Amino acid sequence: MSQPALCVFCRRHAVEQAWRPFCSERCKLQDLARWADGTYRVAAEPNDADEDPDPDDADNLKSDL
Ligand SMILES: [Zn+2]
Image (cartoon, rainbow, N blue to C red):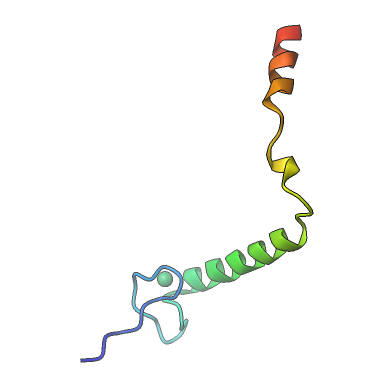
């Protein structure tokens, strides 16, 4: 009656005892990497200005050429 727990990362495959709560080493590593990446971004992102480069600059350069 009890359904197998699903991998907390992909939520598609049943948890493997060796890698629980994940279904595989791949999902475990990807989940850890995702958390590490998210933590890094939050700590190293003073503002979001750099993510929106001014498109006008690129157009001006092309026009000059
Ligand atoms: Zn998985």
